[in-house]
Image (tube, rainbow over all chains, first blue to last red; front, side):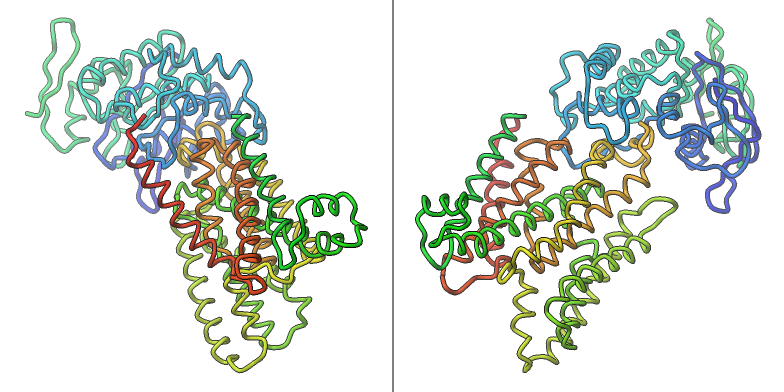
Length: 254
Length: 327
């Protein structure tokens, strides 16, 4: 469970999010929406504990984020960002094994059987068995995204934060990744991810956290957030929502 | 992997032993080996123990130190073009040694002076490249290059003024990189710093491995990124300062040996660092042996030889691999 209380985000002098509070329940799938530059990445990095924040508090799993050591934080929260540029050639198994860093002392070179089995289990969970020896840079965007999720799983943290896990993915791969994340929620993990596609958010999220206009605009179910005018305010664009027979909402530019 | 590392180790030992054979006086290999075991050997003992062995040992230490420093910095900055002199260590040390010689500082004090100035420059560069608690890669490169250019200009000025002085050729020779005239006492002075740097480097290995995925991902898996960056910078500066003190500015090794090591053992820092150290030791000791023997009794500056032999060899390997079909 993530509890943010009067959390304020700033980038230099600019206020990205005026003090706002929200609670992400354990096992929930929460999607952060907002226009480019609204502060989605900043919010995720803040919740991940890798970016300092000016005021307010964040508790993850009952513990104050500011009091966690690096290793404790990594045991609680896994965070995946968008960029994956590195000059070394890396095998998939090596990339996923990085998730095991905090399971050893920071000086400790060893990799033990528990690490190997965690890596194998994580690759199996994202349906990438047999990819261990593949070079990461030969993978497709969809496969890469699943490798990052496997890294998070190998980390064995109950909270997963992902920054735009479906960017660059075709519709089928995007659906697969989102279904995978959804199934992780079913197994008790808490997932928070930033997305751009409003309909992906509508279809998969339990809750949507909408930021824009320098504040937390809404935090509610997709139906409530997307059916009103708030989303239009966040994107500066008129939006039309259609309610499907099953009760879910789809959004289009008007 | 163990087989590969053992193979490298054997090759390195062969090169180091072979380097003991090189020199102005021809001594049969069996004699050299005999003298190694019996330092009191009347014929070859002095030559092997007082002239060749210290020189091979210094070459190996300098090569290992530079290659490790290169591996550390390339890994931390995720930039394959980085070399150990980037931290300004070499430029600072060079300026201090040139200025020291110009004002007549006793030769025995020069290495210590160079070491202190090199470390001082590294600290200044590190301070300028600070961002938050950590280090900004771009600022580090800019600060390092700026200091190096400034110091090179001042050195050029001093050398121009010194042209007639008797110390000028020695200084120019040192700047081009050379192990000539170095002995056990020089090694004893510099080695502790290299060992301290190597110890720091090995402690930073797991973090360096995670840093291959970028600072943000490394932080996310639990790396204390600022601590890792400072450790790597300290380790690289200590290693480079030790190398510069012993041999002047020897290029190539710190830039290219890490590439060769990664090509052989892969990018896992655990193996790449060990392989770099071994290959660096062999490259420098072997090159120095050639410098001593090719045009004996004259010596070629080691930096020159490394550039002439090493760069084409590396380019050949690189082009060959690039053209090879992807596996």
